Image (cartoon, rainbow, N blue to C red; front, top):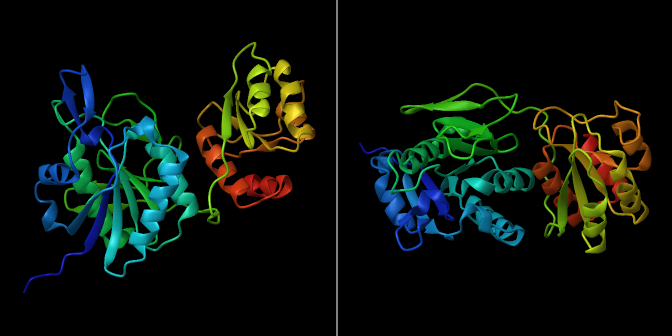
Length: 329
């Protein structure tokens, strides 16, 4: 008796997984169709019935908030189909973590949503796209993945969409969850989950994210010029990628004061990549002083994650004080 295979919808958006070397252009460019990528994943049809959709052909840096939100809308449509067991999204790795986080924060479903991509193009020796796609379909089709939420599958490791980041420019194991590790692995034909993400925040699902929201970096000796330019340009909010525990040079403080006076939210995150920001230091520019000025604190969110939460919160019409509760949660 033939066993019915689960139906997995695969949305192909572009990225390195769709690229090969173009001699005329002098580098890798989008070239492969969804069907061609799927055809390279030998044996994938034994895992699930895969319904391929060519959603786009975008390199990672070409994704925009508007495209991310349109992709989210399509994900919601597909998840609403009773026959669909899960969704796989191929995506450029440069912005994969941002789109995965946005989906994780704004979509609630028992069905798994799995992002994947490739670190090597189809013309490279060791093209990793087909295996990543096979692993992702295996996760999306598995009963174990139900109620886990949005995930990223790369190199046989399963990461939570709320936690992953690209931490290397080109190595195959470029993705990780700093200080946390993967939530599971794909081991041949098995999907093994080792832990669950606890304390998942409530989903934020506005009609649309608020834009623009900027990220401003800090460095030794920096001042308020970029903050002032962002404010003058009409940005709805700003995330400061502060130093260490959430501290900035004293010359940055006047810029933060001007943002607060304008009634627009300033969120303090850390450029460190691991750990929570806090109100530990009380010197000029220290976290304690920034909190007293009215800045919000991102908790353990990295700057890109804090930006997405700020866009979603502002899009939902949250006040500064309501945003403070959101980020403190």
